[in-house]
Image (cartoon, rainbow, N blue to C red; front, side, top):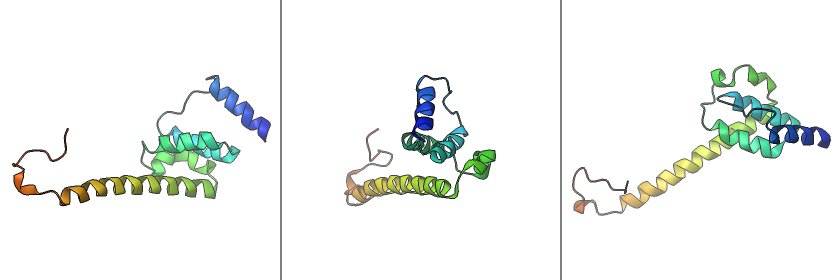
Length: 112
């Protein structure tokens, strides 16, 4: 198994294998997870955040996913969404305690 991982990583580093574009990142994630390529899985998982996770986006690559890999990707995306939501909530909580009387209409609360 180690020799297969080394071979794949060597090919990718030498740019003999083009980087996935668009929704191909879902296929890249499925292949990397099937081969146990953790760093490549993490990279592909981050790249999937640029695309909606729909049946259309997954396409025929859905057959390449093992059950746990698809579940792990969904959980990763859910954690990212929750972290982003918590970040926005922390801003809105800080603004809730701000005395709004001194702000004029149309003046942005947060700097641009």
